[in-house]
Length: 89
Image 1 (cartoon, rainbow, N blue to C red):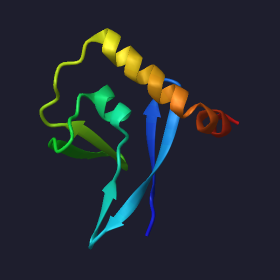
Image 2: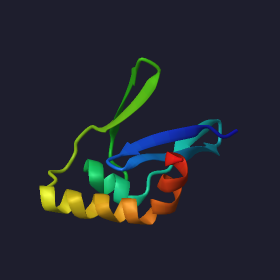
Image 3: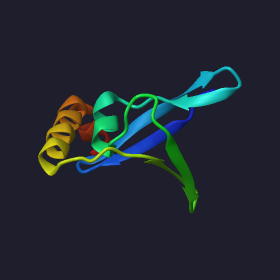
Image 4: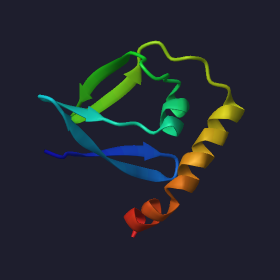
């Protein structure tokens, strides 16, 4: 079973799919996206449902400096540029 997940970045959404893992589903996050939100591998997240949207927030985010944030965001956008352009059409 697959579900589409939309991750919205500065330049538009990124579509992710949930992956079946046993009796559950997993949302796989790229390293760059994890860096953007201050989440480390194995870190805890807080899940909130707001008006039909699932919000994933790091429970204990590490501090992010603005320069590093911009570098990570630029890398994610560069990696997903073709997909973002298709989605924008």
